Image (cartoon, rainbow, N blue to C red; front, top):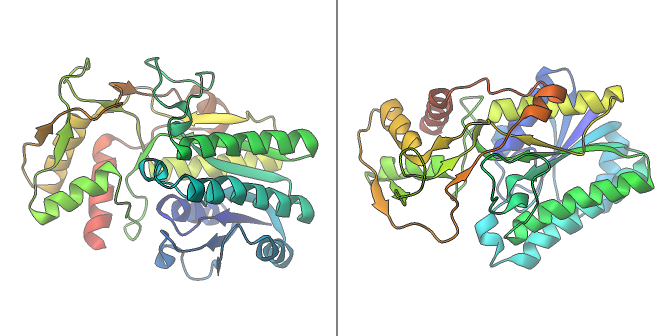
Length: 319
């Protein structure tokens, strides 16, 4: 029994790969290494460098490794950049998902856990996002993730595909000291790199209608996220009823200033963040409930804010 993990050498994907291995489910990784890091995948785990757009390659993988299911994380993941690269985004995220589903159908693989995103909601007009909150994506990236959910839904109507989509919010931290977030766009690595350069991190706006005036976001630990993928896969394998989508959120959220304070404490580098003007379109608060995932996937916040910052910092320092 093996599960194919697309994008399995990325920051999130490599955590999922190790969580599957630790749960006794053999992972097989396919990744282009465009943003993934080969060393994130431990020795002994089957790894193929290639693209999910290559249907023939996928067909060989399904045949050679007796694949039982797929965790689909591969794709173009930068929401802001997607605005200037819409065709690349749709090709990687929409066409790639369609090719993958076609290869799965041809091989008789009927289970998939899809990596979706909070970007499907755009700028919510509610304080607490649920799975029923209206989807209004504001970038090609968010649109492509929503279309991915639709592709799974429609393929399930036409075949016997069992599926679920996990909508991530802000994924941070590290579950292993040799895996770190290398994204040039995420808050944690941006702050760490600024501190390592001797620069002062920046807050965009401190006059929002929040307790400390800075934006509130939902931060979840990457190791908790990986465990949710294992639980989702196991539920699909048992044939138990599974919702089409699950939000993976904290239900409370953390402000940007609280993040900065925790980073100063953990790194031992004291700083007072610079305050810049608001960025257009930034909502004051985006927080999601994880109640449905808690019910079905044993989802819970097992790590504190300090855990998130400390684990991310230690992994970055080791890197």
